[in-house]
Length: 193
Image 1 (cartoon, helix red, strand yellow):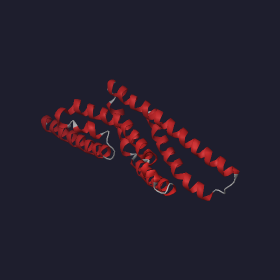
Image 2 (cartoon, one colour; image 1 turned 180 degrees about the horizontal axis):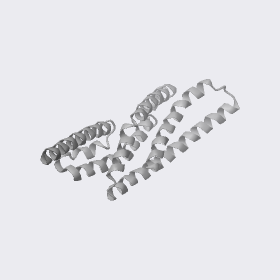
Image 3 (spheres, rainbow, N blue to C red; image 1 turned 60 degrees about the vertical axis):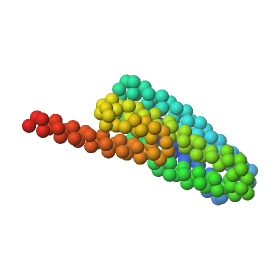
Image 4 (cartoon, rainbow, N blue to C red; image 1 turned 90 degrees about the horizontal axis):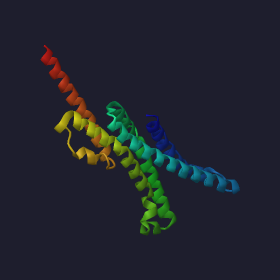
């Protein structure tokens, strides 16, 4: 779980670095130290991005390992951490993506829209994060299908790898398992009476 928590923290460190570059450019006086500051900020952002990607890939492989070792409770905790508690990260990342896209479009006088690659960068790495956390979602779906059989639809595997739908699918699964657990507890209680 330490690796998963480190990945979670690095997601937020990355978005803070992303969002802090705009105010730092605006309020930092322009001189030689300004260029060094911007270089160090961008270097830190790229470094944190690479570390976050590595931690994300390691976390994805950890999800598979947890499933093989039947660590169902850990998978569920990691799922909640990486799907539900990262919603603010994705919202902040969306804001950054919009600012970035508008800035690139404005600075290039619309030419960046012709070269769609720079505009799509925030979307690409956000999708990478969704796929990495999707492994925990898929592991959770596999655990739930093993436990509850046909009560959990196969579509939930796919939903775990699609942005926005992954969170909705996770919430649906959490509510559905809570409902199934309550119903089975009720059946056990009535059978013992």
